[in-house]
Length: 256
Length: 298
Image (cartoon, rainbow over all chains, first blue to last red; front, side, top):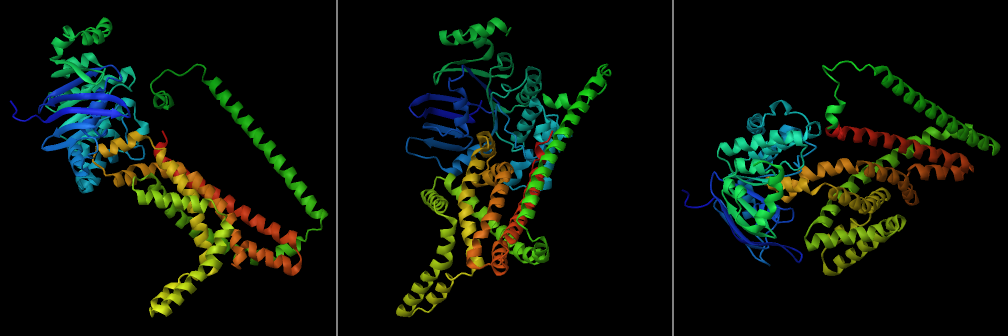
């Protein structure tokens, strides 16, 4: 279908001190594809995601996002311009939302547009309102984040990333910090994005959701990709014993 | 979440025990009021002790009243000017110092670390002496060098090192407090959760844009009480510039006291003037703090 994948990561290593967190992982994401990463905490799935937009500097490996290719090696620091080019094509959503507390909702959403893209303010506001409406929070445009519920904060954070019109969205456990009754509203927004064809990488513990929106699932353990496959097959019938081990107790309590 | 708990219970049936809540509130308010009255009584008693002590030593109230306006008008004016200008420059120095201490550049790290260590590690009084009495020596050497090399502009440069008492005082206070406040700014910048930095750089903000737009505005709110504290301390430390003969509060009081042999009268007057100044400053700091916390009120 696509000659060139949207994201291509090759032989990615990440060390924290003498801790080898990612042991040479390689993967691709096609345009319009939703890749879901699952695994235990400490398996390296969040680190892998954060390496894609250089929130963690890869210790070694090649990262290609769109037309930008960045090679990393011990002793070779990636160029700031390349990192910026990667970040402008990727939108990041965090577990802890990380809204800017001193800015109103609309100011949060247009911050990247006005400061990075140098868009005139009126144009940026119109832009921002469009994305706030998309996540269903236009009526909150002038309140400060402290007045929002966790689910609302996360939806604003998604709007803030979308406003930059990235080619791919990265979600790092977007519902893990939410009260159970607020998870649904966030998942609905992400699901809608998936149906619209947004390319995404999602790290999540919501297995039902993973099966629902994921085009492909990847199971990580100890910094390597143990198994990947189509969601229905992988959840029903994992091939690798390690994947089985991880999914068994979850399946006990959730009907997938 | 607490947001929901605080909002009025719209559309809910009225609480039959509503009166109990009102009674509790009234009781707590009454207890708070009694406590403030008791504290006021203690303050009055303390004030009574002070006044009887002053009467005992035959404190010349008439003399104080007669000279108060002159001393406060002239003295407080210079105290305020010197401390406001110095806190302004100290804040700029502190911001630059903190950015230096948090950078990865060896020159910036080296300069800022040296600056803080030197100016925090030596007495303010010595710094004032060095700047006021010591620096002219540099000017003299430069002028001599200029004469021997035939470069007259070196003599002009040398003149820059001869500072007036007020210039010397402002420079010393700015450098000294800038060093202390560097550490306050650094701690404030570091106290902002790293997620804020990550969110900003993910949007594509540069390191400097992140500091300016995201980190600094949040840090300033946190360190405003500390800056206020430093400003209050500086108002009192500005009395040290009196040794150079600047006509600020301490110098004025000292001069009058020696002239008329009214030590207790004049120094207590000066002390009271400093006290009032610092009370006003902490009140202003409170207003500023309240203004900046607007975004954080539910």
